[in-house]
Amino acid sequence: MPVSVLAVASELFPLVKTGGLADVTGALPVALAACDVATTTLIPGYPAVLRALREADTVLEDADLFGGPARVLRAVSGGLDLLVLDAPHLFGRPGNPYVGPDGQDWPDNALRFAALGAMAARVARGGVAAFVPDVVHAHDWQAALALAYLKFLPGRQPGTVITVHNLAFQGLFPADIFPMLGLPEAALTMEGVEFHGMVGYLKAGLACADRITTVSPSYAEEIKTPAYGMGLEGLLQARAAVLHGILNGIDDAVWNPATDTMLAANFSASDASKRSANKAAVQEQFGLARDPGALLFGVISRLTWQKGLDLLLEAIPDVLALGAQLVVLGTGEPALEAGFAAAAAAHPDRIGCVIGYDEALAHQMQAGIDALLVPSRFEPCGLTQLCALRYGAIPVVARVGGLADTVIDANAAAITAGVATGVQFDGGGLRAALQRTAVLWQDTRIWRQMQGNALNMDVSWTHQATQYAALYRELPSK
Ligand code: ADP
Image 1 (cartoon, protein in one colour):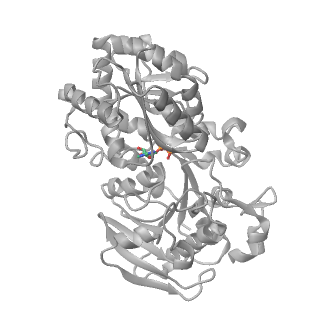
Image 2: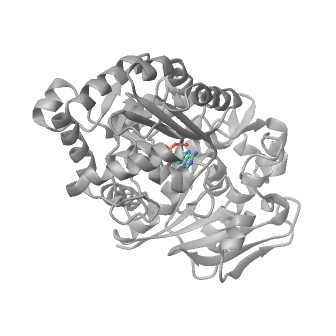
């Protein structure tokens, strides 16, 4: 039975991306198509998105959407069916989708993403001619209010799903915004948007959705506990029966070492020795000593507390003591950016750092580094370790969330069975993990086997898409 889905999201690769959310919303529809699920995705009309649209039809207009005129454009981009909310007073701002030039959240983010949600609900209820979605799938807090509009305003009720990509971002706003949202008083309750005297967008989505998914089975368990639940653990426990963990995949056409034009040398599982040309390229790009015998660690990440990179800064002496090298690509907290820049300046032949966001460099690094470090304090799924596996870089990861679910630790049993793909460590264990990785690296036979296992692992969306498709199909019809 075909299923029609309206996905709602604030990011979509390659049009607008700050993190893994965009990768998911960009790749999942393609994989779902093979399961007879047709996805149309509603995204905000940021300048970069509008510029990328070749042809677009106006399919819905509103003279006053939260303070200004708006329209919904229908377009196809990169093979994806899109609806774009063109509302210049809300989204006509260049740069990061959430943060202004002063580094602060836009002061009207509550209205911007209420508008996205409100428009999603209107579209879901027939606002666009000849489009009647069976399911509304909201991603993260920016889209979550759609489910409150559907629940508390009268009209057709499609099935609803919310996916939590990161519980740390909740869209919490002062209660005095509530009158501006156009929701009835009944929505300012436990069953709706109210959260400890505030208005919580993600909370509303979690309370209203027919099904809740998050991006790995381990994270689905973790977020029911106070340590990871970020205050929402009670609600998530109460809704445990409809909470599912479905792992992310990656787009294995975008991430394909055999065809990737951004690499110095292409390779595949059968000829991984060609990675050495990419290693040399990475060493050169970061100005390191061109030493094939040095174990080359890499980091591609937002530089934030979540990612545990302060722990890596503390472990720089260990990296040096092992005779290893480290390359870091990322942006984020000023103290972490400064810390890695200072480490690179102090040890230019061993440590390299690029502060910035660079898709091509990320690809080149995955193809050239020996091991990818992901010491996250929590990690809903994590995509960089999946890219690393696909490119034969050994992931060295904290045993949390999706990292725990996607990497097979090189313990004695896994090595004997020949199934290891990486190294896992528990909180505080990063230094020991670096050492363990160096020992594994020195054993060429084991390292090659791990690399081969990684390269042969299926990290695509194929399997996970069937799980989403099954979830959509079991939604109650109302
Ligand atoms: P999160 O969504 O928490 O930032 P994920 O690992 O789920 O982390 O996804 C991050 C995505 O962003 C990956 O595709 C990764 O390659 C990419 N990425 C992160 N930082 C950078 C950067 N500085 N340059 C290029 N790509 C980056």
